[in-house]
Image (tube, rainbow, N blue to C red; front, top):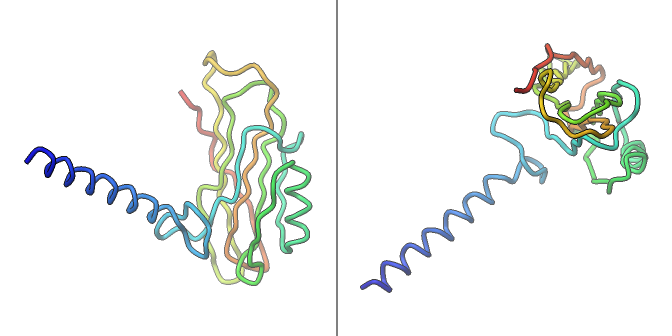
Length: 157
C-alpha cells in the first residue's frame, strides 16, 4: 500500500513538472510570454550594455545579429515580418542594483508605445561594487513608428 501511494505521488509530481514547462513556452516559439502580453523579452542583463543611455529599434535580422555581436551574446532568429525589436540601454552605472526592462507595449494603429521601467537601488542599500550597464531587448509587434517612454523610476528596497 505504501508503494502504491508513493507511486501515485511520484506520478503527480512529474505531471506537475510537465505542465510548468509547457506554461513557459510563448507565442511563436519565444520562451516566457505571459498570456495577453504582446511583447517578448529576448534578452536582458545588468552587465555588458552600452556606456550611454539610449534606445534603438531594430528592423532586420542583420541589424539584430550585429547588436548581439556587440553585446557578446549569441543571436536569435526573429520574424521581422511580424516583429520589430527594441533595445533599451540604461548606460553605465557605478554599482549593482540597477535594471531596465520593457514593462508594457501599447499599439495604436501603426504606432507602438514601449513603456520602459528603470529600477534603482535604495540609497544605502547593499549592492555589488562593479561597473554595470543594464539593458533589455524585446520583440514587439511590427509598426512603422515606435515611441519609447520611461516610466517613473522604481527604487528597490
